[in-house]
Structure formats: structure tokens, C-alpha cells
Amino acid sequence: ARYAEQGAGWRTAIEADLAQLAAARPTAVNLFWALERMGRRIAALGDGDPVPALLAEAGAIHDEDRAGNRRMGELGAELIETPTEVITHCNAGALATGGYGTALGVVRAGFAAGRIRHVYADETRPWMQGTRLTAWELAESGIPVTLQADHAAASLMATGRIGWVIVGSDRIAANGDVANKIGTYGLAVLARYHGVRFMVAAPTSTIDLAVASGAEIPIEERDPDELLACGGTRLGPDGVTARNPVFDVTPAALVDAIVTEKGVVLAPTREKIAALMAA
Image (cartoon, rainbow, N blue to C red; front, side, top):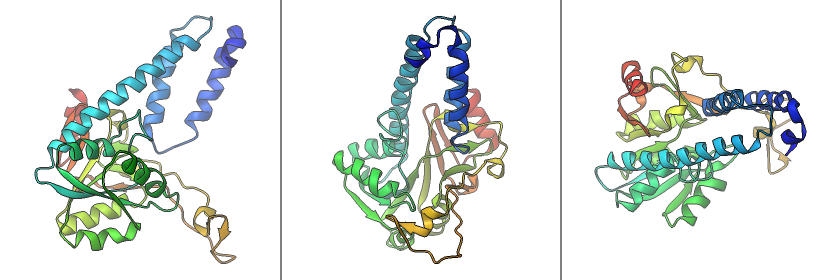
């Protein structure tokens, strides 16, 4: 409504809002992909009320995302050959996508097919997305879920019960390096040591061919107080600082499969990622 009230000046107003959104999250490339797509739609509009056309485009993105997530779920579940238990990290489910999920889309499809028996959700410090979002979402869907502290994953893998780690991604470099929630890299290292396979489920809008490797992906850092305090109570001593990166990069060599709506890339390399995107 605000843009409609601007008359012919709505373009100036919306450009400022687009710039603000683009500056909000430097790591996740999907945001820029969506803003660029909406920008192309904006460029094709006249000077009348832009809202109906932009709502239609946003609705199309939403519908495509849901359909793509379901396809990812099917493809990812097919990789799980033996019924097993899995670990996931952060939230890549219905709450973070168009309504089905990327990593949790694979979990949903795998559980429905009898290939996933149980899910262990890392709590995901410091924002606790695993506790507040993933565990809630899986429980609401009737999928057996158990929470664990992030650093409990190693001892769980050592039991031999875990067949896969399944995570999402915020940006995938041209060589297959994967940026995801902080702690993902450590999970991948643990998985390789314990013979657990590592799957990344993400739409092709997450793949950034302009970034050669994970070393070029900007990593967002947040307020140190998120680590120095808990529940509004400061725990860290005065004078101590905190390092609070929000994401880390998992090298492609530790990734067994990248699952997208366009297909699956096993043991990703630069050549395989390029072939996927060209198709």
C-alpha cells in the first residue's frame, strides 16, 4: 500500500527498501537471487500501482520453492539405502523455506519411505534454532526427534547408529564448498572420521558460480553479547570479548552429496557443479 501511495515515485521508495534488504545478510546468496529476480520484474513495470505484479512474482517464487523442496526431498531420500538414524544442524525446514524444507524435506521424504527412523537435532548455539525450530517442527510432523548439545554429535556417531548428516546451505561456491550455520564444518569432519555420510540439500539459487571457493564467501559475524550472555543474564566476565561467526565453510572434499531440485551431485567438484548449473 505504501508503494501505491507514492504514485510515480514508488520506484525511489522501493529501491531504498531493496538496498536495505540486500545489506541485511551478507552470507546467504538466496536473498540476493530473490532481490535480483524481483528487480527484473520491477524494471518491466510501468508507473502504475506495482503491488499486484510484485505479489504475483513473490507468489510464484513461493510456489516454485515448495515444488523444488519436494523434489529435493525425493532425491535426497533415494540416497539413503539402509534405514538409519540421522543428525541435522540448525533449521532448514518448513519454517525456513516455502513450507516443506530442504534438509528437513529430505528427512520428511526419508521418514515417509521408512529410510529414516530417528532424527537428532543439534541445539545450534547461540540462537538455538535446533531447539526452538527444528525440534518443534519435527515433533509437530510426528517425526521422532531428540535434541542434543552441538558437541554431543561425536559420541553419538561413535555408536554406529548414524548413517547420514543432513544439512542445508546458505551459499555454495563454484567448487562445491558449502557455507552453512556455524558448527556444520565440525560435523562434516566428525562424519568423515566415523564413516558417516554427509548430505547438503539446497536449491540451485544457493549455488554462486561467481564465487570460486569457500574462501571468498563473506562470513557474517554478530554481536559478541550473544555468546557472553544467555537468557538476558551476562555470563562472560567483564573485559572478555567473544568471537561470534554465524556461518562456517565445509570444504567440498568432505561433502558426499549436494542435492538440488535439478539433480544430485555426488562428491562435488567444480566441473560437476558447472554441469549441474548448465543443465
